[in-house]
Image: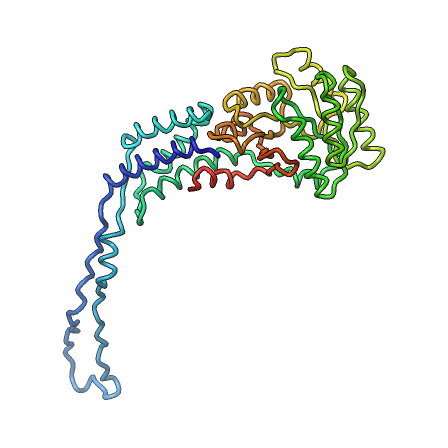
Length: 363
């Protein structure tokens, strides 16, 4: 997973590490001051009449031993302790190559620029001390930059559902063939395992077989599905599902919708009608991680038409680049909620930016 992006990040680490080694200087321990000289107090003239025996001090000042840096500390400083300062000119070429590498990994241009700028800010102009490995300094700068981009819009769906007024209505949107219906089934299983009651709304009345497909999933995970005949009004189907949930104290309604491109005016108007008739608490965009920049572009376009609250990326386990996952939250301003990691109903992983970044740098 993410092998192509890992390779490109590793190449950048090596180049900056070499540049740091070129600029680094050894830190020599400061010489300790000579404290061996004895301090002699100046003599004060006095008469015997002025001095009583009780005022004469017989204490001898304590002699302080000089502080000396041990051989081990000196050796360690010379061998291990170095420092460097990088200038912008040192990073111009490597950062340009980093941006190109990120673009080749399907990371959007604005996101690539944001990551490169964050890395530059972290490394340029400040005096930094090196331990054993210059690569660690570069890796930490990259990790921080990518993590900051991905965690800018974090949203915990579990907390939201727990605290929200029931029923919670969630509508799923996206194009055909990206795993939207399967993702609904996986989320149904996850919610049911958490103790929630769930009902599905078969709002994709446009695609042949879509209602039966959702019904099979519903039967497999043990939840009820509300459906009408093919070509029925999706807004009516979803309205009935929400009313059923209210009447039977169901916790969550998950509404499927027809796959559509944002350019399909009729289907987009249909989606807007669904949202007017049965306003969703959350509107979730679903696409494939392997679609890369296409998924990022579609997410942005859907977000303009019907503002989304979050995204689910499917087929993440087959994604060699990781670009869509890094870009979508930044571009849409809405978080990634879950990652599809396989074909089973339990293969839905809650999105964690730290886990994702750790995977990029895992050996």
